[in-house]
Structures are given as C-alpha cells and as structure tokens.
Image 1: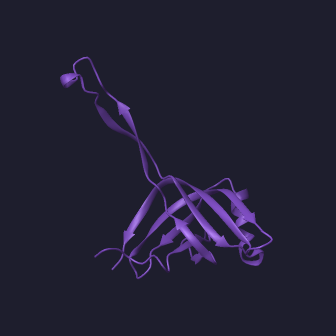
Image 2: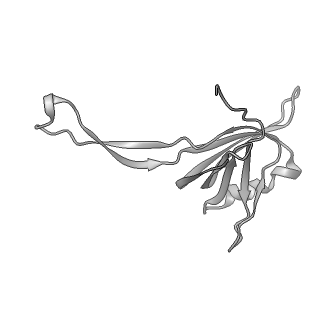
Length: 140
C-alpha cells in the first residue's frame, strides 16, 4: 500500500472526569502534527572504546509537541483559552481515521495564536507540549 488518507483525523480533548473521561473532537481542525518523539543520547565513550569510536546509550525521552491549525470560531474555541491558563496537563487524543487507532497523551497548551487577515478566514495555530509518555493504541 502506497499510503493512507489522513482525512478525518481528529484531535480530541478530555473533560477530566473520573472514573470515565469523555473526549470531544476540537472543531474545525484543518491540520494536525502529532507528537514528535525525541530521545537524548548519553556519550559513554571511554579510553577503551573499540577503534576509538564514540559510543552512546539512550537517555531521557521527550514526547515533543502537537500542533494544530483550526478555522477559528470564538464560540467554539475560546474554551481552549482555559487550557492555556491551566498549569496541569490535560488529556488529549489524536484519533486516526478509519478506526486505525489513536495516540493518547497529556499536554499543556503553550501557544494559542489567532489571526484575522483582511482577505482570508479567521484561523488559529495551537501548540501543545506533551507531558510524559504518549500511548499508541492500534485499531483495526
């Protein structure tokens, strides 16, 4: 297979309820960049490293950031400003189309940047910093 159609992918926001948290899709999302996983490396090179080549081991991992672009509607999206005010991470999910699964993560909203150009639509860019390990669930 050459590829999969991304149309229908959603970013969902958890309501924080316990014991069963409900997730609702953020409206009018036009582009989603899911978490970009990163990992530090630790240099463990010593005077005895074979053939004088540097040696590394894996260090701390980072869930990266999630970025979305939306067709901004203050009536739909200003509730997200409250997420910006929260110090504690909130639960979110990137839900893949066609029941392919989801990527769940906790994150802090670090950037909410609306724009209102005179010759185009209302839009906004949002950035979420992932806290902890994202969980990938594979679907059908």
